[in-house]
Length: 352
Image 1 (cartoon, rainbow, N blue to C red):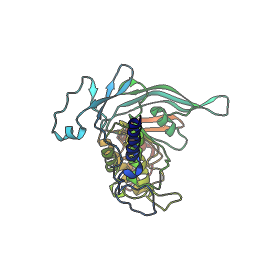
Image 2 (cartoon, helix red, strand yellow):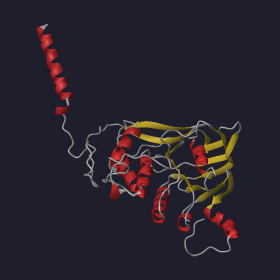
Image 3 (cartoon, one colour):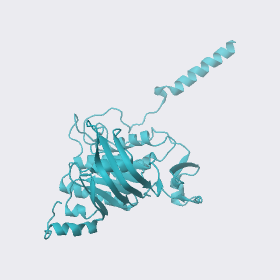
Image 4 (tube, one colour):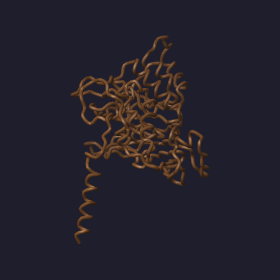
């Protein structure tokens, strides 16, 4: 008994010392206490666990639904992409997806009613139809209270509990609700953690949103930073509110979009991407989103008004007025009705 008791005591002492915080070697580049300042040293990803497994996520089209399948793969994606290992054959019916592939979205006769304090419901969106294709930007444009945000939420399936939607939404030809991780939705106003740097904020977002066995979190964050042109602000504090000034409004908006890009969505919904941005920042933002769309992502967003330079970057436009769809089609096709309203357009930029 004495030998068994001594062995158990030794086991407890060894296990407690191994799991104690003092026995761990902390990373010198990872900051847990925040001090005011505009710059911060590069974040270290050594504290996050790295797993031997990897995932190969593909978008599979089923009969009535879209399934995002995760398949374990022993070799890492970096080795496969480098060419050191042969790529495994793709199963039939699978679409190579997830990194830059988008998805086609079609909405048909979409009607949204919201029940207020009155007995009857108000039709906010009335029989709207349209589509969005991969690698393109589709904009929902109209004045205030025209139903832009409501239509965007209806397509994304993020309606308020008091709203009722009638109509059909198809994703890649299948009538189904969008799966978690297959799309991203950026609100008009988003709350950011001002005490973190841009890279830290996006990395924490990746830790919370991505599955634990996904070991490409660092590369995902780096891809999101490059996609939104935030490389110069990666190690700067976000700031705002009770902190110091922090990032400009344009860069803060980019961080909000990059947070959704961490999930590598096929479809990205943005409510007013040019909200509270000046003309120069708005043009730079739209150029960045155009590059993102050229990578294959499907972009659908709302906008209140735009200059002619920004307007020329749109692929398709859906004009709304009091919930009615006045026009849907190619952007160049929309100019002909506008020319009938004005005798001529001036050479300088004019807001529509």
